[in-house]
Length: 88
Image (cartoon, rainbow, N blue to C red; front, side, top):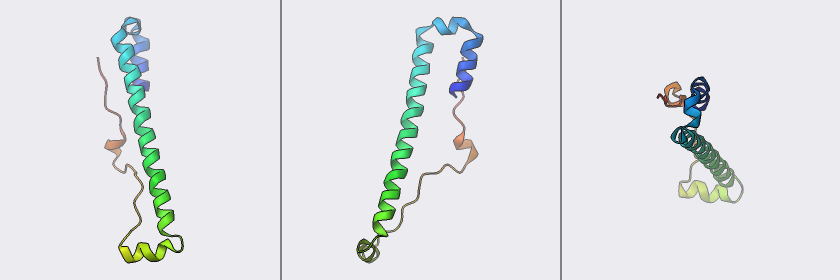
């Protein structure tokens, strides 16, 4: 999304001078970074959890108490992988 937005801004220099477009670009960048960070933090927590329930003696208690391995966050649908379109 940021690449397309940057190309649009480059084509129309009057957008560069507009503070709202600049603020929008910063907000989009910030949001993309927050999403990537949250996805990475979740996947790291899942890997830590999965490792802990597979190590002795935890494996004994985890199985008895019904703890099951968690699934990593992965986007499988190609439509979900696409960023929303930003148009002016």
